[in-house]
Image (cartoon, rainbow, N blue to C red):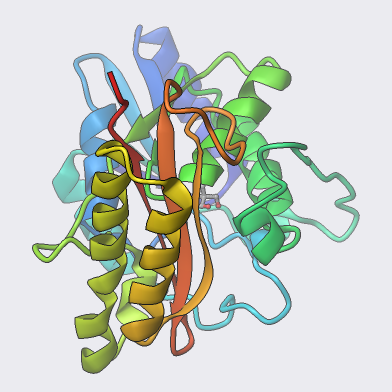
Length: 281
Ligand code: PAF
């Protein structure tokens, strides 16, 4: 596995892979890798693919009061995990190279970025769209892989890639979960033992709401029950909503693909999760 910290070297290596007839697959990450990221690498791997993982803790997607300074960083461990997973190239750009002083561009995706995390974390999706656009230009992948846990992020990236004519297939990979159902996240390391035990209430609340709605229950009632269950478990709820899985519009009709989406805080740790509601046929 090759590791690059400088764009010219990365581009030369990828040009040579392309000249050998290999297609480039990108897995963008912020490091602190876990089994969920490895599932992205595995999804990206196929004969003839050159799998590139980027590791970049993107300051532009963190708000002023968010966890940029304490975001977990474990570069050596990440590189070992990527080697083991069969990744071909690691792209580790320095922050000054990504955002030099004169950097003045912002990529903003209207609509899908607006509600939910876009409302709770102003500017977050501009930061995501800007860095992903840069990574797409740096790596020029034909396929790029993102976890479905960040459901709104995936919708934002898909919209951005389509609108800006990036010649890349954006592929969502199912959420990986711990045995008790908690979605894997780099931020789970912030949870102490007591919070970790409580955290399972999040996937459980979504599971119950999904079953109630799929069974014909009123969505508003199921959502209220889910919010109440989270509060009872000790969460401060940012939102629990039912949205159209493609557009993220609220109050989707039952013949659309529907997704439950939630964000809630346990102490200082903010967790997000989502779950599909089976269509009523
Ligand atoms: O999901 C993440 O880890 C990040 O938001 C991403 C897509 C790598 C952009 O910084």
